[in-house]
Length: 130
Image 1: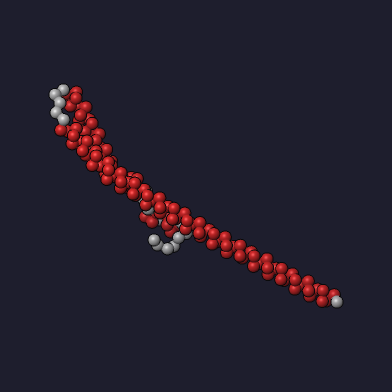
Image 2: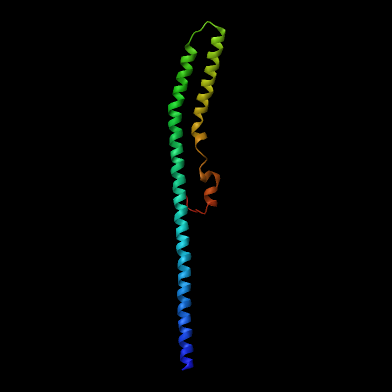
């Protein structure tokens, strides 16, 4: 009788151990899956933000560049007799030229370097190329 109780106890212990090990590996598997999905979500958000920055920078470049050039043309066409007024207009024209030049570089200024070019894509754990 004692041998039978011992066998049943060992069998039940093995069954419980197998169940615990199964749950442990299931938790690990689900955690890895959750982390992979979170990483994909973060990369999707980064991609969306980079695309939005590029769009805004392009819109800014397309709208401000011609406007500043038109302002410079209008300022340079004004004819004044006073040297002080001419100095103010020249200074304003130079400011407009610098602003227009800065606006010309705005797509690269407003947009960060993509992750792939920085090498962060590989370091982030994503081995696929997009």
